[in-house]
Image (cartoon, rainbow, N blue to C red; front, side, top):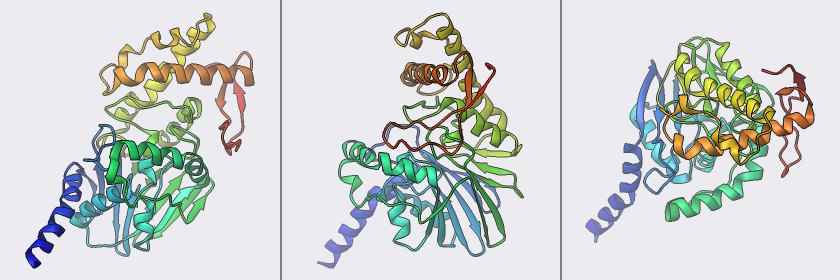
Length: 337
């Protein structure tokens, strides 16, 4: 009977061990790691951890950058964390509103960790949480078990600083990007940045209905101004600022510039999928996302023309039809770029 019970326990933990194995660890600096999940779609094997996370060790506890995409995903992430540090996770940072940036919160809150997020991220999570849970139930099935909507218990508007165990950590929400509440985590002494979904490396980023391609460039510029030595992106391996520029900033600039020309020539949304993005065909998921991104940016830039006829909106309004909640940064018309 005892052997059966022991076998049952082993079997119960096998999926967690397998999910932890798909995570790749990158040494960023002493006591700092990037934990890279697979680039594939969310599935029962990765437990929703298809993103890059971060771990910062201090003498008073560990700080986790993003909690995992589900309760089980957070458990798998915790399995990896235990291999890297003996410190308990005392703080968890949500860098945005995508599911892998916050739906593991419940696991960490139950263990006494403080969870930190921007106010805009929490507002976005409140709007899209139910939809995300429905999506995950279809993609993960029984592996979604235990996952509940749980929000950060510490929120901030633009900036939040954390001093813990000899580390100084700056969390900044400069502008809407992939999601309305995207933030990055900056360690000035080490000159390391965890970008959340502001930076994608090795694969095409996703411009969604809730994204803002104009202010995304502002968010990227805020990171660029810091001149980080090492960049841990929201998706992909540890990288450099130059590679982040190539795969994220330059992609967005090219898409907006070619879309501006398409609109100026009277092009419509149907033909917008044909704007030239071929310079970025080397990026993963290009065939899947390029056309969808083009249509999303077309719609955004048409809106910008309505707000500021004859120019583009350099810093746009967060215009969710669901919440009617404006992003904290107001609209400002500027010459075309």
